[in-house]
Length: 152
Image (cartoon, rainbow, N blue to C red; front, side, top):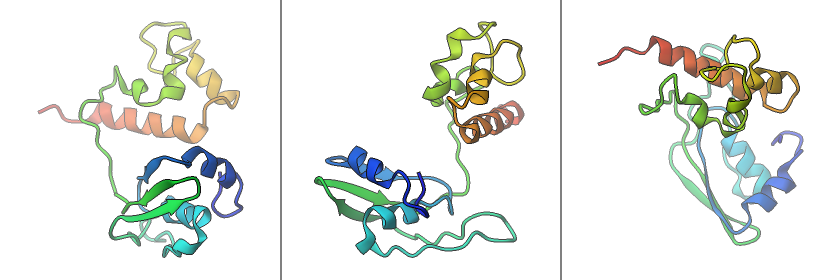
């Protein structure tokens, strides 16, 4: 999906029809741009990515609610700079990624963490395009954070 080219916007509108949906994510990922693509009258302000930090600049400062075709509502929320799921650990992080979790039992090893183990069905699915490389990259980065997290 792209708010820039419009690819996938009609499918997203259909998916959101009749539902209440909040867009959440880091600053600068395109939440407001998606709102503008779905609801052009919204005229949400969007900003550039900071050259210094390579992050968004917190253009959205409060929650905005818009009605969308089909009776649904979409909420644009301010971005955040970090995410922490205290209940997640190295053993269950895959459960936060449903597209990866469905491949978990298909790995060669029962305790596969989907990083560098041979016979990993998740990595194979990424290579075959069945799992987004971006999502997999996020998984690996978060797994690395979990490994380095201090236990209190």
